[in-house]
Structure formats: structure tokens, C-alpha cells
Length: 252
Image (cartoon, rainbow, N blue to C red; front, side, top):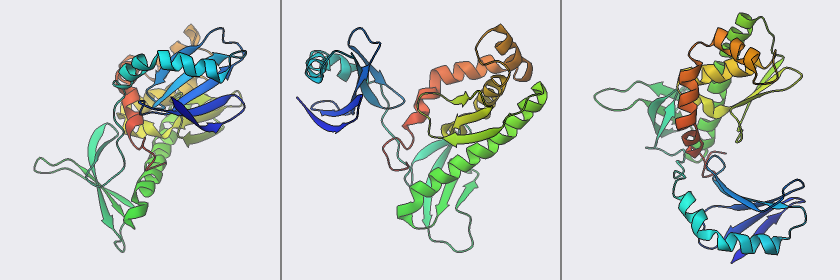
């Protein structure tokens, strides 16, 4: 039914006939039974097994559940590569990607406003084969710039201090705050409306004072980000969609 394509100490990756997504088997020391879920953000099937289970048992469990997996995978949106002619959101506004090829004296990426019913455009210069990576690098830099500004704003409002800010391709959360005051964010926030990026920045800044989600934490977020409820609803309804952009590996 399946073929092993990679193996680590506690994780095994499988390619399964009839499933158009990687299957990740994770051995968890505290798991009491086999569980199965489909991750919309990682675009994969995750099977968790107890420490004493073997991979043959996991394979049989997956085979019994294959119809369930196929049905859930139908709800995972198709990936959108960074390619010329494709539309992606930038700060919540759809933009058409255009690869211009080598052009002397032009920025790596230029944003052109829409006109006559045409969507705004992201024009990427340079060798076409490198354009997806160049666009991804530019989006990461734009996310870092916006996040740096909003973190500074909310930190000043709350009289707090962030020690360091990093932007990465996080899959499990939009942002995080370490006990040392280091903030980390997903670059994909640049795809969301400005309100959403602003909320995530405020959320993580508030964690500099409260490393929990108790009432005092939410009072801090509300104090610096009054529209937090609107942003939370947007993330809950649309956040997973952002992971489809560049998800086929053409941009990572």
C-alpha cells in the first residue's frame, strides 16, 4: 500500500497510493491510541501512534481510514505557485504576478496599481528561473518591515521592549514569543489584510508581559489593538488559505 521515503527517530514519511499528500507518521511517547488528522497548513496527513505501536500497525490503521483521508483532503485548497500570471494577495489585496525577465535599472519587485478593471501587479525582474525565489525573498522582507513597525508601535503603547524579531516560514502558528523576549512571525502575514498582521504583532507583544492567555493578557491586547475580534475572526475563517501560496515548493 505504501512506500517509505524518509525516516527519522520518531517520524516516518510515507507515500501512499491514492493519497495525493505526504503521510507523516509520528511516534509520541504520551499517545494512548492511534490518531489521524489532515493538516491544512502543512498540506499533509499526520498519523500519531503510541510509543509501543509499530509501523505495520500504523499502516493497517491508515488503510482502514483511507476513504476518510481522501474525503478530508478534498477540503484542502490546491497550492498556488509563484508563477507569472498567477494572482496572490498582498496585504489582503489580490495582485497579479508578472515575471519581466532581466531589466536594467529596475527594482527586484515593483508594485503597479490596477487600472481599467485589471488587478494590481507585482512585477518581478531578473532571470525567470529565479523569479519565484526572488518574489518570496521580497515578501519576507516586506513582512519584516511591516511587523517591525507594528511591534514597535504596540511595544511603545504597552511600555514593553522586544529584544529581537525574526520572520520565518512557520507552519504551526502565526507568531511566537520566547521567555527571553524574542518574537517570531510567519512571513505569510504579509498576504493577509493589514489589520490581521497588526493584531498578531499586538498579540505577541502582549506576551512580553503575560506568557499566557489569561484575562490580563487579553486586556493588554485590547488596550493596544481595539479591533482584535475582527482580526481573530478573519484568521479563523481565512488564515489556512494563506498556506496555499508557494506551497508546492516552487518558492521555498
